[in-house]
Length: 396
Image 1 (cartoon, rainbow, N blue to C red):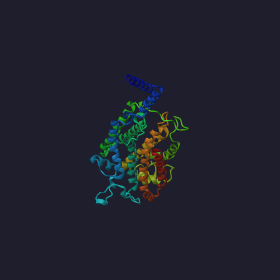
Image 2 (image 1 turned 180 degrees about the vertical axis):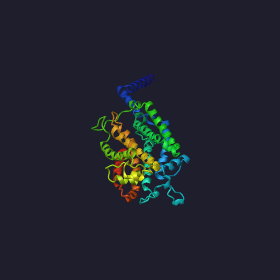
Image 3 (image 1 turned 135 degrees about the horizontal axis):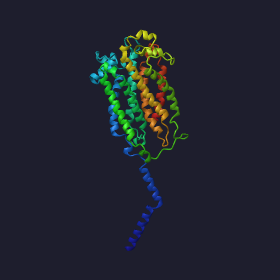
Image 4 (image 1 turned 135 degrees about the vertical axis):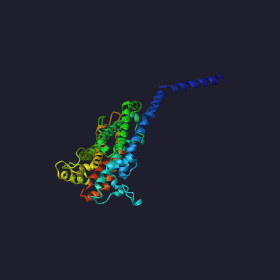
């Protein structure tokens, strides 16, 4: 009996030595390393307060943008909303007097032929505003609400999105505040201040998280992915997509920049620019000084200040979307931890949806524009190519 007990103790000692041997120490290190190779909840998930702030602020304005695109002129937020719609002259396409046959500002209100009575160019601008604004606010909502498994808060993957969104919000706020006196004259300032307040609160919360959050802690606990072959930390994430954005987005930026800073000014390029300005009403609300249009529409230009406000706001939303495209294409690099592709994919996935909304608006209004001798085929093809490339690199 004593002999069996000594044998059992000897066997137990051998097992302890085997478990504490050098090979097992290596295994223990591997297990410990594997345990920290995945981010924790604190380093992965977006903070709840930031998520709720974006959901409330951007969600509120996204609802307005959705209304402008799919139900132009429909009042959904009471008297203040109605005052803003009357100021921007968006109610002329809303008619609910015929029951189910009513257009109610939807795409059924789009006619195949443009006339002075239906003003398809004005409706195009307002629906383009809805598409551009909806695309911009979805750029914030989609990545935060539907967070992908490979996008980690602690890695700083959302930092470029927060920085660009905060700057873009402040630029839109500056535009509303610069026109506050005009809005007051039409009793539309209350709705403008509500939109401004939502954008300011969201921007402040974003900047607070940018300044106070420690994005570096995620890098210490996660093994960095190897860099792609032939690329360094300062390399562009995708040269092909960068060239695509450089060509297509630069063209869009040129047109939108003119519409915002110099509305009504004709450019030698692109062709038929004068027809575009006439069809969208730019010659009426912003006739160039000393031109034939100024002599014809100069006296009534002040009566169309709401049209000018909408046209410039549309251009501004297009510009902020283009700004985010440039940031993803040129400023975000591969990085030493190879996180550049993840950061860019956050932009590209939503920007593909934004381009899709713009393509839809251009395609629906193509017959109406054609009746005014304005061809939208090149616009649709360029946007379609960029949308396809963004979707390929963003989702695959």
